[in-house]
Figure (cartoon, rainbow, N blue to C red):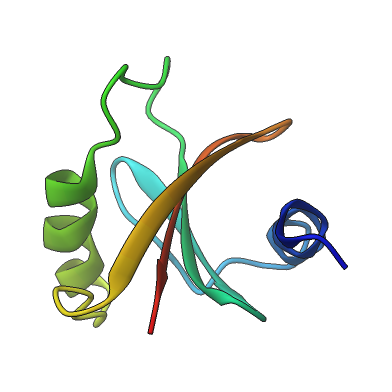
Length: 80
C-alpha cells in the first residue's frame, strides 16, 4: 500500500494529541503531524512541530522527517 494511502487512512482515526498548530497521529509508518493552523506555510514547519511535539510527550528530535501534501492538508511525518 502506498505511503499516501497509509497516511490518509491513519488520519481518519482519532488523534493522539492536539497542539496549537498540529493534530498528532500514530500511523503504521511513524508519527504524523497534521497542520491545522490555517493556510500551510510554504516551508515545512519542522521546528514548530518539534517544539509542539514535546507538549504532547513526543521527543521527535532524532527521527527522520519528511512531508506530504494530502487531501487533508500538510502532514509532517517523523519516523526511524
